[in-house]
Structures are given as C-alpha cells and as structure tokens.
Image (tube, rainbow, N blue to C red):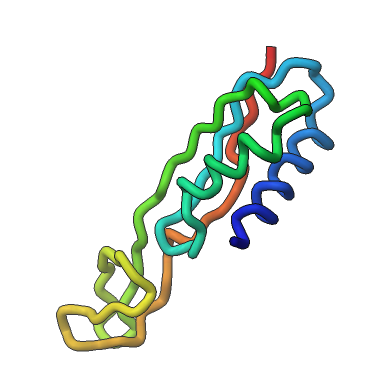
Length: 109
C-alpha cells in the first residue's frame, strides 16, 4: 500500500513546516487520476499521526475531477480514467487536471 508512505510524507512535511503546537486540520487535494486512494490516506493518517501534534487533527480531502484535452480535435473532456477516448475517436489525450496530490492548507490554533 503506497498510501502509507505518501501519508507519512504528508505528516512529516506538515510537522516540519508548522511550528504551532496545535494543528486542527490538514486540507489535501487528491486528484481522481492521481492513483492514490483517499480512503486509504484517511486510514493511514490516523495511524501515522498518532503520537504527534497531528494526532487530533482533522483530515479534509477534496478530489478534483479529471480533465483532458484531445490532441486530435482540441476538445476538453471529462476523464474518469487515464485511458479515455474522445467523442471524435481520438485516444491521444493530454491530462489537464486530476493528477494533483498536494497539501492545500493547514489550520492551526
């Protein structure tokens, strides 16, 4: 489960960047095309944060939808999967959004 390593990196990054003693919430963006399972991140967060300043913090995850542009017809399309076919029949799709995996904000207080 690579989500455990990803979650450990998230927790480490937040703890290194935030000096406040109380961290209330970590806001993540996990794109639907990122290959990361948000529910696994949630599960791992509780394990990895235990015993740290993040132990009582809430984890808020948004999941941006996938968007792409067909290189054949330049049409923007919604993407639920990296392997997608455009309405024109084209399969050469440039991913525009949905692969994000980032810490958007940290609430302290």
